[in-house]
Length: 137
Image (cartoon, rainbow, N blue to C red):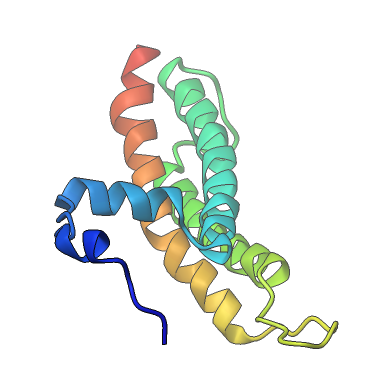
């Protein structure tokens, strides 16, 4: 067992603030979490842009086949973000492989994608409808 020099034991451990702890956690997020969030975010932003185009077309009086189906479009948006986000996460987030070279996948990867997609779908649509949409009049 190695002994620490006396001068290093004399210094107390500095307590980090809540913000410092969260910032460090944000900068050092695990790769599977980053992949799950980015997969869901990419799908959500792409579909939100499509919804925004549809909403702007309706607001400007463009004749859209089927009429005003914004509620259906929002429902399809949520289902697709949750489904595609889960599927993409399942495909790009493998289970830890240990010492072998084979890649294992399980439902846990899809569950990670699903639970990452839920808040992302909501937040992206809120930003689209409440912030971006009013900018276009």
